[in-house]
Length: 380
Image (cartoon, rainbow, N blue to C red; front, side, top):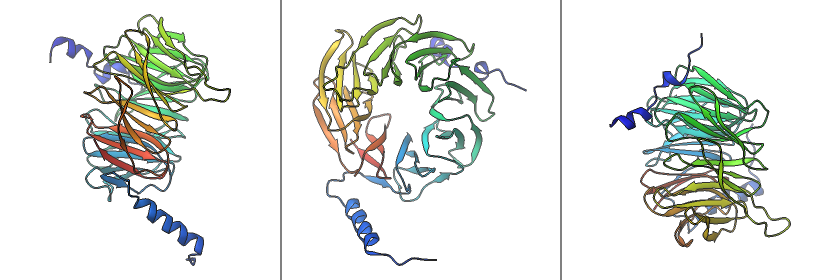
């Protein structure tokens, strides 16, 4: 490792100052069971594996090698493997509300799960034992640090938390208002965190010093997603007002912006997901109205688009190809070419909306969580 790379790695201690009677089955129930059987045997299901232990909608999925974590509306979270989706490796017990956040630490040693009520728990993935827990208030998101066993979280109260795991030493970053810290993204240097807020502000926090290096009003509505390009020179935020803003994280200057034109008086234009292509100057934007648009970063204009029949829930760029994976409220995963906007492949299997999606580091495996209470594994 060269000196430059070594400088980017943070010691967790540098980030935090440590403070001192059975019922007879009726006709309707039987019909419902038959319907479920038919749905499970649908002809167009191309999933190579299906996880069925959740009893309600699955809100979050995470992937680390062959391990998958899933959390759902049933207040439960599980860890299971791609090869064996029938038997969970372990269950993450103790949550009080819908589990909306899951995430593996970079080395895969820890798994964090968080529910809507603010209960955050961390598990040892080898033993399945809980190593740490905390209640931080209504939770919006969880993010692991890229170079240290440090967990970051945003809450509806506007407070962002940082904990050293498993010791639990804590640090907070408060916006000074009650506007929700709705999304967060660690910058590539590992020293700064970009946070988008419900009042349309973007703040960039110095994790060690605790100061807001950038504080800019970027949108008129709630910020729904925030991303950073690979070299850390731009932070992009998307809002439910339909706009995207590109912010310089050093000085807070808004260097460019994108507006989505409303197609009708009642049309939904909110930005649901955003992503930078890692090897071409293209960005992808997924909208509530089902439109996937590709933005030419060099020319500062839209180059093409693809129309989904339902809202784009999440988009993820392939790690080595100019293709974008999308999941949609119609329950289908698609692969679109960022150069021309054409849909290349579809993966079917879910009966209801897909609520979360993750891909493997080589782009060959897709894992989804759905409102139909299942998780599915697809292969590219």
